[in-house]
Image (tube, rainbow over the protein chains, first blue to last red):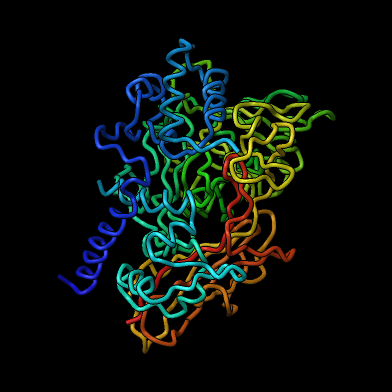
Length: 108
Length: 441
């Protein structure tokens, strides 16, 4: 291995160890579940896949951090301006549960 | 798994940069200067992680993720493009990696991609047959122009300019909490050479009525839902910007047909303003007697608060104002991030700078986290709205890990900040100074 290559692999390993220790118990890392179309694992992920990735991938969702109320506004905007269908109240609640837990920030 | 780890460090820093510093490196910031003093085991830990001794560690601002860790998502091939980092595949959005922007004129294959919808059939097939441009609304004569009309230099003047196009959200990835939108780092910028007709000539041919206030652009890109009644995006500009000499209807990019991802066969360019005003796959310009309100004009879209908002704030839509000129900005294009260089030679550093409607008057570099700066050679733009090339040969005092920062100042004295500027709900206008990691051996 070239010197640089060896340096980078050692760095990657080291980073892995340090991050592993720092992340466990800190970020809400799921043991189960997988990333689907860019969406991180979380409760009701399947409903989010079904209702929210017909047009765009899960990445626009996975890349944002909003309050529950801001996510609620986003769903309104999808329905008003981008042709998203109506949601049963219970479905909307479950989708918001996912968004709040996985992509949520506290209301200030 | 690699994805999770690499997201991990950004999540940690997003949530609480100082806590992340403490957690990862045992680093605490000096409460007055906000500079991190990295000592003992913390300094050893960060040095091991970046793989080198770090001169100037005492200047490194608290909460700064070392540039050495900032990179890397998996590569993804897009036909006809190279050097892009893909942010999304539906819709396709991809930024140019900084070291692929070193050409004075951005080759079409390296120009970034920003889609709101799907690629139009005409662009997929690279066949302009049947393309027309409608100009209607507050005009005396409605126009329907063909490509032959536009290309006929008995009808219209042809101009060729190097024009920078930048996404309003370039740099969004730096904001915390993470606002909605593509997480561009620094590569949503390009400066190709564009040939076309001044928009002014076409609008004068149509004859603007006295109540013409704003343009409203429409294009051929299908909405993601494929619903023909839905519009993926429609923005416009005040008439004054539309009538500027360098606002053009372009039909060539670097002397050839426009790249399908960048607007084949015809696009608008309003250089210096958010790229979303430079409508791709143009098919219609509707002249309106009021500010346009199409998708992308209202609410939070391409708007910033009229006052400094706090991170995560719910800003009232009535307090949001439309973005016009983009702010002063620059990017380091050479060397590539994380390059090794020998101590006893100077390092040639190159980059590009631009400033919306204005010009760049000065570019400076720092190798000690902003404590000291040296002014560098800066070229004039070849025409208004082209970016400007800067370069310098720099020396390092000893071996180790450095970060080279670049900051530009425009002709009105506005200078790029070292820190991320004010948070806004959609994460626009981050013109923080760019930086690259260098390892001196």
